[in-house]
Length: 133
Image (cartoon, rainbow, N blue to C red; front, side):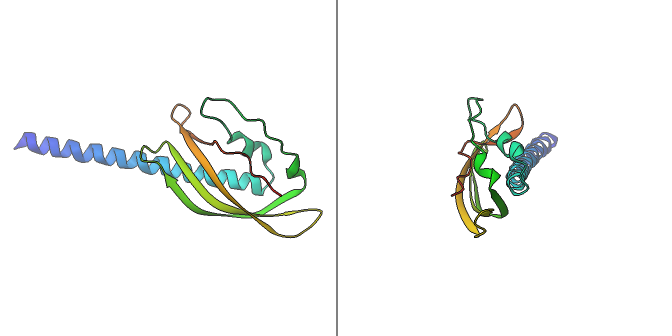
């Protein structure tokens, strides 16, 4: 009887730990998505670029000159689809923005592919930098 109680307790404990890890990883994904969007919103371009990294560890070349004239006014995340192994996610949404020399509000729909670096405990964007038209 004591052995069965021990096994059940161990199973519950392991399940709770897995659940806590899942919540922590999901929380860190949500935080990364928000930080990325806020970086674009508040013209912290270097911070936004820091989220772009390929799975092989290389950083893409990103021409940010378009951001000299673009102001992001808001963002909305439609979906977050997390892979079963919780190492990648597809995020869809839209950014509201205008160009300073025009002043017309535009919406940029996007689909971003995020991946989790287990060593760094950090989420990165594998997709291209947003292409503001």
